[in-house]
Image 1 (cartoon, helix red, strand yellow):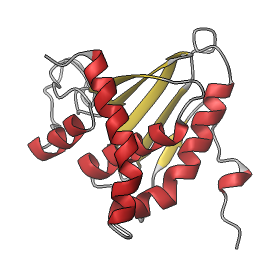
Image 2 (cartoon, rainbow, N blue to C red):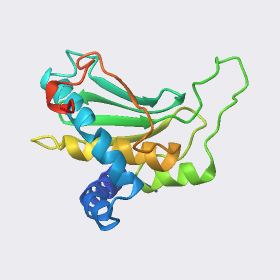
Image 3 (cartoon, rainbow, N blue to C red):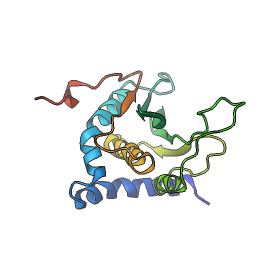
Length: 180
């Protein structure tokens, strides 16, 4: 049986290993994706978290999707000051409730999400991971989890256009805009 503490431990271990693994691959497709999109995700997470008490400000979420395949997304919401839940799309919500389901992730994609600590059952919703948020928050680790899920389960790469939806941080701040 997988417990919340074991999931948190797996996720923490993954977060500690991801940067070293990415660097050791010398420009791997995941490292390239991180270089392209880590700053815009971290920036938005920081601004969402800075908004304050999630129980008072309930739109503290970030959705990162692939516009060409908008059914492929990862979304996270701070639901307490020290808690965040992230979900990876399963296809469960793609169709109306009274219509037959038309999208399922491959077994390989589900296994990739499972290795990151996400739940692997999709019969009642999306794949989920519930995490403790330390003080100070580790926004880089959350961004890496989101990008790893998009990379491993949905095929996102550095050249893939990603869209961001966050009511408290709708646009990238100047710190993440490349200067030419």
